[in-house]
Structures are given as structure tokens and as C-alpha cells.
Figure (cartoon, rainbow, N blue to C red):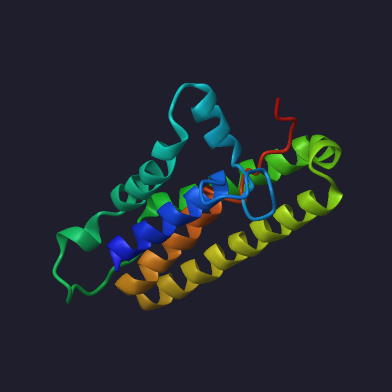
Length: 163
């Protein structure tokens, strides 16, 4: 299940970059700004999705290290900090870049990206709550899949001009 989660997160990151076609930034390929910075720094874009998948696996490698019958898989404390940090930074990103987003991508684009980001934040929080109550490995992995999918897609969509 952990490897399946990594594959999903990698696919979401690839789609966010527009690597499956259609270009970006668009609604379905929001071109996350951290990815833009990495590409402008010389990292090939095709390497970014596998790096996100690797980060997902390394964030909580316990499912790979334990037996399949392991009970009591609570969320690592660092996950709560990451959710809070991504939420705070994403809110700041949208509030600072809103005008540029409306100018260069259009009002509809920015509102839909913000709505998707808000839905993914709420889904992350709700799934975290389910995980806290259940302490189940599958719920822990699901929480991390939603969190990493959100962080690599709609948390920081590109809101400026592409030259």
C-alpha cells in the first residue's frame, strides 16, 4: 500500500507539471511554484515527480520496515507540522499572488485552484482525524497521500507570467 501511495503521489506531481500533456499552468496542471524554482535552478522536470514520490516514502518509512500485521500506526508528529506549514504558506502564497494570478491566469483559474487547494486541505485534516482515532496503517498512508498530493499540486500553483 505504501508503494501504491508513492505511485499516486508521483503521478499527481507529474500531472501537476503537465508531463502527461496539455501543458501548464492549467486547472489540471497547476505548475506548482516550488517545481518552477527547481527547474529554473537546473533540475530536469522529469526528475521532480520521482523525487516527490521518494520524499513520500522517506517521510514515514515505517510501513516498509514493519510486518504487515503491525498495529498502532499513528501519524508522526512532523506530519502535523507539515500540514500546518503547508496550510500557512499556501494561504500566504494565494493572498500575495492573487492579483498576479488573476492578471496572468485569469479569475476562474485562480478561484478553482484555490478551491481545489482548500478541499485538499480539508481532506488532509479530516483524514488526519480519522487516522488519530483509528491508528491504522492504511489511514496513516492515506493521510500522507492526500498531504503530498496537495503539496505537489494545488498548494502553490503558479500565479505569474511565464516568459
